[in-house]
Image (cartoon, rainbow, N blue to C red; front, top):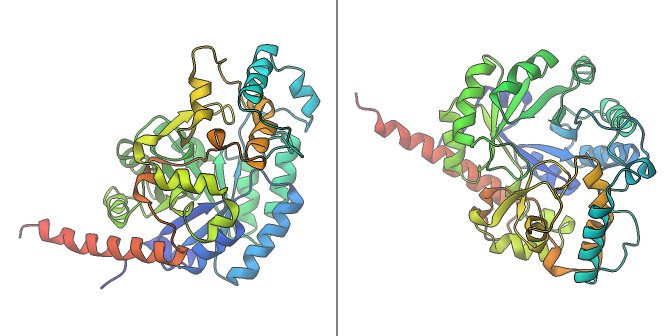
Length: 366
């Protein structure tokens, strides 16, 4: 059987046009080694950690290509000052969070949480960028924001540049920034996501992008979804939820989250701003329900919400507070009901995509 292929495969030196995003070094390397293009989510990592972790991935993949993703939202504070942010958080929000601590009897965290180990700020972003740009990573991906100067330097250093966008209005801004690949991320997607459904979004972005390749994100779970993405004019797919239940990722996953993800269907995810201040799709749990209650305050903007809840989120997993443990996940989670190796996930995706594309020719009447 012929395998699924697009021009991006030849351009980037990959076997399959499947881009896999994960926050785990081993999982990213496994995606690349399985023939895809692994992308490491480094937004919450210190610069020195980024340097070490990208080197670790390189050691695992050899000369095969992989990328790194940073979230670089505009409008963040200039300095990495937690005290300055805490001073501006309303007391009502602090009281609400303390109420959650009391209700669920959450002990204090032994260290700052993932969202409070540093403040999302220009100071940190510049240091993270320097770590990425000075590395030998093959791709620089912008999850939110695409600073033109950073894109230009990445290209100058031979790195492919990519940006995730959730609206046709963002296409020209990304093109003007110099980005070489666009990811059309639909409403179905996990974590930070936009308001437009994947099927409605992708053809509009493909048309607006012209010769710039487009990948599809949001709701991609099977080979049939990959075939549909190519039918809409994309050159590949960007998948994140698919790898959460890979064997490789379990070392990065709280076992309660694994159980919740295995049990979740597509209707069991919600979009909330309670995680970071930006729209974030995750599995529905007591955490999201508490923030949807009538007496709950409206979540604050990033990075204020990060600071408000960051230590509590860390304490929840550290102390196994089962009702509040949760994970970002897309609506595609309904397709993943077992833990499998990355290679098996990749093989099943490719086999079904290839078979589906071959079958489509039967619908053409001479």
